[in-house]
Amino acid sequence: MLSRQEALDFLLAACRPVAEVETVPTLEANGRVLAADCVSGLDVPARDNTQMDGYAVRAADCAGGTDALPTSLPISQRIPAGHVGEPLRPGTAARIFTGAFIPEGADAVVMQEQCEANGDSVTIRHAPRAGEWIRRAGEDIRSGSVILPAGTRLRSQELGLAASIGLASLPLLRRVRVGVFFTGDELTMPGEPLAPGGIYNSNRFALRALLENLGCELTDFGIVPDNLDATRAVLRQAAAGSDLIITSGGVSVGEEDHVKPAVEAEGRLAMWQIAIKPGKPLAFGEVGNAFFIGLPGNPVSSFVTFLLFVRPFLLKLQGAGAAREPAAFPLRADFDWKGDRRNEFLRARLNAHGGLDLFPNQSSGVLTSTVWGDGLIDNPADHPIAAGDTVRFIPFNELLY
Image 1 (cartoon, rainbow, N blue to C red):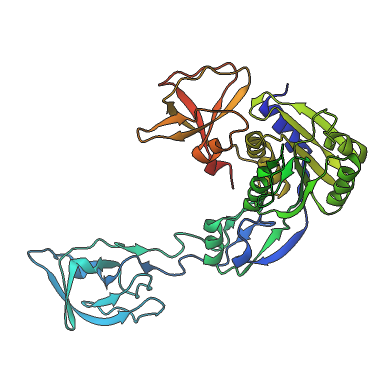
Image 2 (image 1 turned 135 degrees about the vertical axis):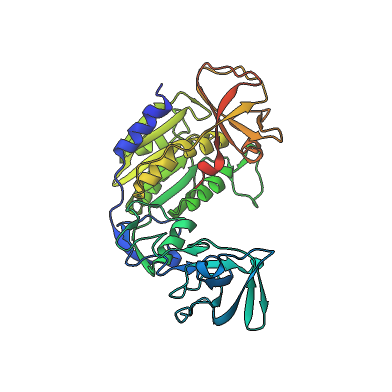
């Protein structure tokens, strides 16, 4: 059996990222991947400005200001954000509001909580240092600097940063096109009567949501009957318009498992046994110009193998920078576990004492464990856990987006 890392290395080595570029409004770029560096054409802030509501002063004019011996200065002007004040006359103060440019001649801001306005003058009970409460021009971004490199996957933070230098649109790699379908005569859609022996198709809902979270352009071919010809026909249709085809179930060697022979007839397929639990079987190949990944049918196995293998593959396919191993945190186990000969991914959640509790039933069919849990414990093969041991915990937030 392959280790998790061996299988992932093979997948990523085979991946060919999309190359087509399109220009997209920054307001619509969430979750997309930059095709080129974003370079700032201006300093941010453009000029020195105030971090606080208060009074812009010359620090030397307030050198003796204390509660016992305050300084009183006439207010020479008022400067709201978005307005440029006049040069500050010596021996005066300017009423100023957060974000407003510091007037020429001022070298400090005294916050309003340390001042008391008295008509046309202000009493200052603080001796400011030069530079106090002033944001310097360019202290965030310098003109000509790369603020976001090509390959960055854009989140709310990156979009705000791009907007802060005035970028109304961005060059992005096109969305990855993913086709999905599900095989099994037993599969039933919620809302339909459940026949004897039938099950509701939970994997369709979970996988669609996972793909949507990753910003994919999704085509859902629905439930395909357990029939070789029907499976081959859907594979051809999916391959014609997809970069990646994903299925769950049907890649075993049973008489009713038609995905494996269908992929082999239409393209090529590698079947792997991976030394992880849940999620031992995984299939990878190509149909036409589309990659193919076949996930296990059990719902937890399908969910976990998507997070461990499909997500990093998709990120590389999207053109995102080198796939980052999800962050894992050393936390205390508040349970005992006998371990397994395979690398386990155990559903667990944080408790009020800073430790981890384990979901009592770790079966690959118990989907409630993925809702109850906060993440996965990455437990090495042949590794029992005793209460108090430190384990490697990967939060779901590191794996879902």
